[in-house]
Length: 345
Ligand code: SF4
Image (cartoon, rainbow, N blue to C red):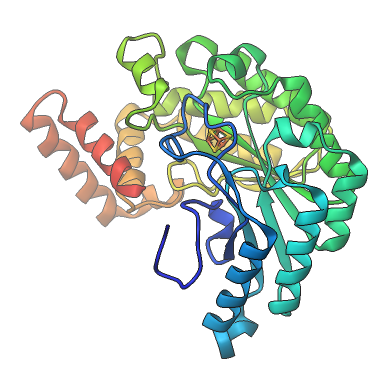
């Protein structure tokens, strides 16, 4: 239970829903097995009754009171809200719209496996009730990697799910984890993910970079050396292959996660593709010391884009910090980067 507000909220929402009203329709994740995901590991999935959720919505509306006109978007939590009966979700969406009359967008997470079992007619019902967008974690389109990461859905199911959402008229935000293939599978991860996305043609493709969280099965695989993570440079190569392999789609590509090294890679496909590839090439072609300067500056929050390397003052400060770390010991740069990444979350 999260107690800052007089109604219940779950622990996470997509970055693009940072300013949304959070309404907890179910608790935790019905699957809860993905090897890279720490979020709900110690918690059991629970459905909440429609009446209980409505009670929260009433308390939320009272809480915002005269500021209710500022609430323009709502996100329905937790990990797989669409798992409940369509009729129940319609009732909840209608109620939240009635209590928050200025809402322009209502969104939710939905698992690929769950959505693949939904009829398009059910999804259309949700769309008509007011569900504007579903955020779906594809993570990868490569079947051996989906199985290795225990995602609980095949590429075929992801395609079925994605196509159904698009057909229903609900906007689809598809998430991909950069670096998920590790050293072993990065080319397959990039190519097969693009193959799946090309068939779905989602409204949004959102990338976030893998970080291996404490206590996850993936951390154990990394500790034994079974999973070898990519370096920042290798992730850039992987992202390049992914973008290069996206064809005949008109999705918006977004890098809206704080751990993405090259957050400026963003734009409407297909037009933005050459520009996005060019950004990656500019990074890859930097001399090694410049790459390190950019990585350190980006992870430390000083740089936002490659152009920031032209800021002489910042560049010198970061170069000085790198020199000092080198003098302290051979592993200090890597340790400092890890620490900076932890602090970003
Ligand atoms: S489906 Fe989502 S929330 Fe559930 S375990 Fe996988 S990544 Fe985590």
